[in-house]
Image (tube, rainbow, N blue to C red; front, side, top):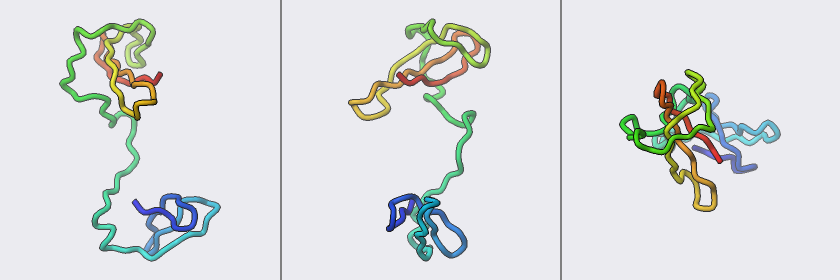
Length: 109
């Protein structure tokens, strides 16, 4: 990922130039193809592509939350577990698995 020297925003490739993604900045530079070879580019993921927890995660036997609603089947019960996905001063993320249909999602506190 390359950042604009003028404003610090991310840059994107346009032809032979890298241009700033900030509409208020006109920053640009020549593309460095050798440097780009080390970059990994991904397209935006849809919600269906996100993997909330590993597929084999053992949710059964975990506590059951009754304060949630599954968007897939409407059930109000889901197994849950907590993981610290951010820095220690942030609240943990709660991962759910519907007890009825098995849909997985995450909840933020």
